Length: 258
Image (cartoon, rainbow, N blue to C red; front, top):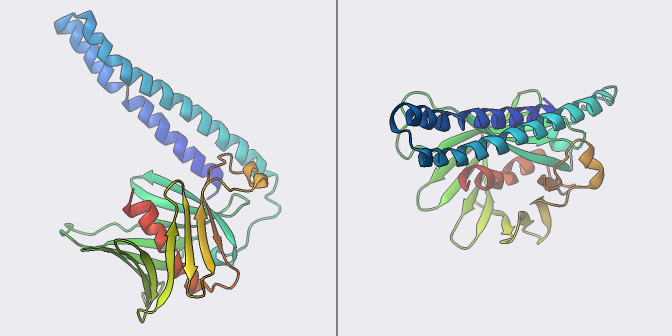
């Protein structure tokens, strides 16, 4: 999957919203002409028509962006992306809600690096049962799991692809911390109240992971036209397991608090 496919999916969502928004005014107009014959009732259709109009133009914008990006990426297909998700120092983060919510990660060249999505529950959902999220790479291979427990506080347990527990993210009233499998402190989350700028500060008081919006390098805009696309960056000395663990705060940021 590529970033042009993401914009195509977003365009489909906007088109569906535009079509669905026409259903209520159709019913109102039909009912009014058949029964009430009151001109003032027709005013209730205006918000729906306006929403449908805006959604349709957003559809046209996204489908145009998808087409332009696809053409640009076709010119770079001779240099395919063979990098691993955990080898990259920076990833672009896109959230997509199509049935099951997805948090998609992309390399700066527009190719997908991986995805986190909510795991479907089998049978009847039990009250209080933890939500699980699966982390896969660009080929669909599972690289980890996240399990969200919400009792007195939010706790996100992190597991590798073999379901070995490697640590957790715990959100308390005044702080959020990341702990390893033995419960030892790994880092704390520092957040900005004004805009998206989340940082993990490790035990050496150094930044290890950062998520921020509005700081995307200009030369990436060839494939990512939205300047406010969130960028996730890692320090160079983090291992794969450390990245998997510290990325757990993204579950809270995009799935729990939304």
